[in-house]
Length: 225
Image (spheres, rainbow, N blue to C red):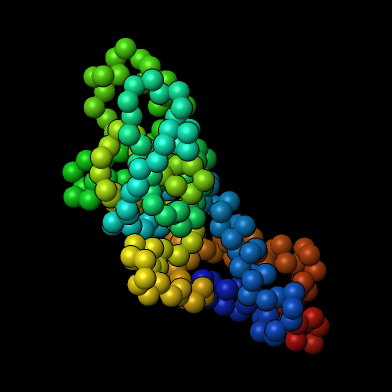
């Protein structure tokens, strides 16, 4: 896997854009890279290929949970007694696929028990079914950056997901050093073999917008020289 800085450098090398022109800042280039990276990742998701890329997923091995009320969890309609736990802190930003945030595994800390993704409304409907008492599955849903877990009494879980933001320091306790890694040094979560397609898309857009001339080999005409 590349870092964000390496992905930006690859684009700069293609464009021969080595100057510090304001319209070609790292932020500008990275925003265009991201636009096409998300499109390609969503395509891979639609083709059911994302889960096979181990390098795209990161594990938060110990995520603390706290108890919350039904109103916050969008479960006011549950008729039976229900204890709802929620991740104590917001998760790092999660990549959104065709059917929502992408998690590969959410389990107990020892990995022996796994959770099934659902929605609060679907869970409420299930609890109102006469057969729900025979349902031994454990469920979770995602809302506003948090995960919610009904009917468990655990203090923590393990989460494996596809995160857009850095997970550096997420699982550290309050008061510990959580200094952020320099953004350019963090991992760019796109498989290297797919980056060539992103390079072509980014280059084409910048040519279309007039940011580089069609003949990038003619340095005398290069607007960034």
